Length: 417
Image (cartoon, rainbow, N blue to C red; front, side, top):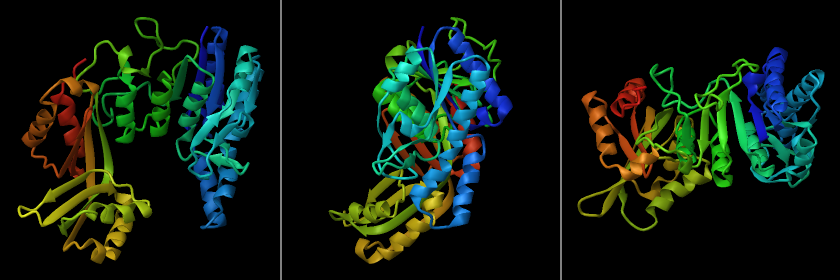
């Protein structure tokens, strides 16, 4: 018998038929003797509908009232799933975030979880009752409903799993695991049996849409073994691995992975922009003068490259950012031109960041050179490079995205079965 937290996203609970399918997945685990809690998202499209209503009511709406509205989507789903499970003969009840409680900070609309009291849910699970928990929400310090930001139900699920000391957190989605890259771009992409927390965190932050970044951070900190699997397989006859384990991808500690590949996957993120400010006086505080105002304007800066002139008097600073922040960043830097002291400004959108990820890079030389040569052979120009122990990211023109992803996927042998 295991203690499981099962999480189902919006496409998995899009209508009553799919909610019945989810209930069948839950029943399978209950019938197997497991203690089960379920975390659900709002039905597909419902959150967007509620957000649009808030914006229609007032463009400058109160964030606390926004949370009160958008949190209702998960409340509906949790109640409907509890009703469906009860109709199947499963003892179940729904829980809202404030009832556990899931305590968050006061950043309404993008709150962060501070604590969860898992004792009441553990009592329910040990008594054989399924706790159906509304994801994406909690209660802030002002005693009002708070929401965790888009994709927050993944974070809710991992946090609940940590709070109840679950053996595993199963994330059910519309794909059957984590792949070496996007199968829509590379048809030969392979599903990975296991991925380390660190690799998954890089993949999530660099464009993989399978899991939300904060959920992976939580899983890594609390060592919550997380399993990505499909909610659209037959709940009564699910696929299994040759060893009998469920079919999907386990995200776990690096120590659990016996044979670690040098490169695990290729991630990409489109809609990037690049800004260069040139001939900036090279003196202490210049970086703070550039990036401080951008941070205050909530501009999310990513890759940073600095080149100092031969005489050491001036420097060029180049950085990347989401294309959605480009106009705001441009306005900030124009306002601060005198304080920063740069001579020329250059900027462009239509960029893409492609990343090579793998914990095996720590112990293998030449991984970066292999990427640069493979891209060069295809005539793909690299505009910026950043590296870490387990990641190499390059900035290229967006038009070359698919060619670059396919090239790197083949270069590291990820096409091979």
